[in-house]
Picture 1 (cartoon, rainbow, N blue to C red):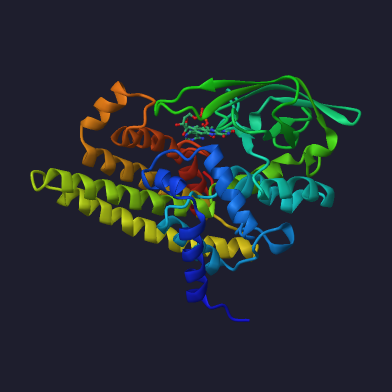
Picture 2: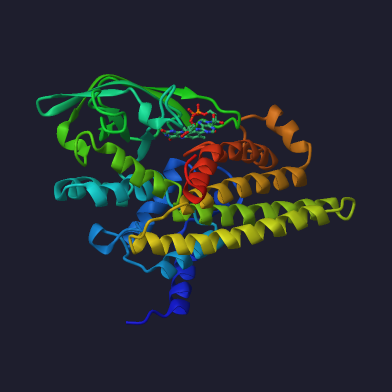
Length: 387
Ligand SMILES: Cc1cc2nc3c(=O)[nH]c(=O)nc-3n(C[C@H](O)[C@H](O)[C@H](O)COP(=O)(O)OP(=O)(O)OC[C@H]3O[C@@H](n4cnc5c(N)ncnc54)[C@H](O)[C@@H]3O)c2cc1C
C-alpha cells in the first residue's frame, strides 16, 4: 500500500497543534529545559495515540513507520515546538531490549518505557573509565537468583529523577577486559543505591554520581548473556550517537536561535548590525539540512541491518559542533545582559539567562556520549586504517 505522505504530514500537524499542551510548547519554544513531568505528560499523549515509539518495530509496540514517515514526524514535531522524545528509554535501552531481551523481558520492560512509567538513566562511565569504558570496575557477583553490585558510576545524567538504571558491570576479571562485562537493569530504589548531585557550569542539575553498596538485583534483569554485555553496550552506543532526536533537537535549536536573533534585532531597532549573525545562522541551517540527509541514509542502513561504519561518529560531531555554534550566536544576539542576569538571578526563570545556560550546556555536546577526539579517532581508524 502506498503512503500519502502529504496527508500523513497534515495529520501530524493537526495532532501536534491540538494535543501538545501549550504550556509545554512554550517551554520548548523559549529554549528552556523540559522537565521530567513535561516529558512524561507528552509521552503519555503520544502513546495513547499509538505513536509512543516512532523508531520501534510494530511487534514491540512501535509505529512500524518507514524512514520517511519518521523523518516527517520529527520535522513536524520540531516545527510545532513539541518536546523531543526522551532518549534513554526509547532511543537507548529500548532497542537493546528489543534486540537482546528474552520474550519475558520484552513483556516486562517495554510497555513501561512506552507509557513513560519507567524513566531510565545510563550507568556506563566511572571515575577513570570514560573514553576507555572497557576498563570499568563496578562489579556484580552472582548469588543464587540475584546479582550483588558494588562500585561507583559518574556523570550519570538524570539519575536523581530516574527510577531505573541500565548499567555495565564487571562479572568476571579473568577474561580480556571487554569480555567480562555484563548489562544489568537495576531499580534505583534498591537498597544500597546512593545518588549524589554534581552541579555543572550551566547551573542546572542533571549530572550525578551513583554509588552501589551490596545492591541486590534479580538475575533475570541481566540483558543478553553474562560476560557478553560489551556487545549490547556497543549496539547501544552506536544508536546513542545516532538518535533520530539528535537532528530533530538541532533543528529545534536552530529555530529557537533564529527567534532570539529576530527578537534582539527588533529590540535594537537598527542600532546594531545583525548581518554577520544572520550569515552564521544560514551556515548552521545548511549544516542542519546536511545532517538530516546523512541521518536519513544512516537510518536506512539501520533498518536494512547494514553496518553503520563512521556515520554515528560523523553525525554526532556535526550535531554537537553545530549546537555549540548556534548557542554562541544566541549569546552574541542577547549580549552582555545575559551574563549579568545569569549571575544575578541564577536559578530564576529569566529568558536571556536561559541562553547563557544553553551556551554552557552545549559545551558538553562534544564530550558526552564519547568525546570529539575519540570520534575523530574512530573516523580516522575506519577510513585510513588503524596506525
Ligand atoms: C553532560 C554530560 C552528560 C553525561 N552523561 C552520562 C551518562 O548519562 N551516563 C554515563 O555513563 N556517562 C555520561 N557522561 C560521561 C561521558 O560519556 C564521558 O565524560 C566521556 O565518555 C569522556 O570520558 P571522561 O570524562 O572520563 O574523559 P577521559 O576519557 O578521561 O578523557 C579526557 C580527555 O582525553 C581525551 N582522550 C581520551 N582518550 C583519548 C584517545 N584515545 N585519543 C585522543 N584523546 C583522548 C578526551 O577526548 C578528553 O579530552 C556524560 C558526560 C557529560 C559531559
